[in-house]
Length: 97
Length: 243
Image 1 (tube, one colour):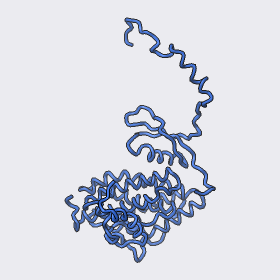
Image 2: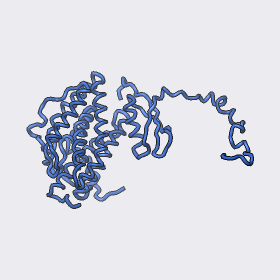
Image 3: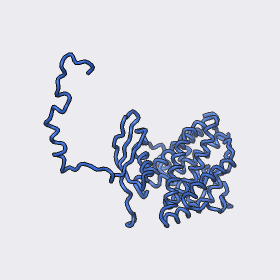
């Protein structure tokens, strides 16, 4: 590969399966533009009949939580069982639940 | 399979179309490990596997597919010379894909409306052909309307392969197709893409004096022998070998 070559940008691929309700992250790939990214995604992620719909998103457009923020972001959730519906006992006689 | 015995028209047609697909699959497979990008390598290999699937189905109509693919001599192959042309640079591969897949999609679309085993295969394959044509179009547009270098290379490739396109209109025995209408449709399709890509449609003759439609008669160009040697040597060295 020549030294002057500029790398193609990275794209994240989301696939909705035949019975799936939502698009699920399948992986990533390189492509020169969105149209080619869709075609590459078709070849890389759906050629065995895995999906019926594809999204591609430029990886640079994704804002991700950082590993450093893991504790403040996710830790407090662990010790608050009352945030889960299973914490509550359903009183007898409640209808339509 | 009835209707495809040696000597009858159905056999002749299935062999010609099967050889087109087989030889182009082999050429495209040569990109494995060498394509400019991993993603493009997978795309080319994917197209090659589609073509190989078509070849297997078509050659099976004519006899034993392995026997036909691996045991025939050069003069017994009936593919058009276009598909045996070397990969060249990426632009040459794309130009060959553009010329061939545009033709194949139009032809198979027409064959799908007929009856018999080839019609059934064509109906299934035409969707693959449409994808191959789209892939070639996307790249023709990007290379033609890309950098000065890519434009120059794409034009050179279109020009170099132009003289192998005339053979595509030579009627194939056993296929009931309006070849003149097919040529007009092909020309319109290719002209549209090439023009949008800011490239020029080549103006030279579409066959050379020594090669006018000769692939279908079993006359092939010099690089074809090496392609066959690579494709057949394993089978010939180890007859009956399996995984």
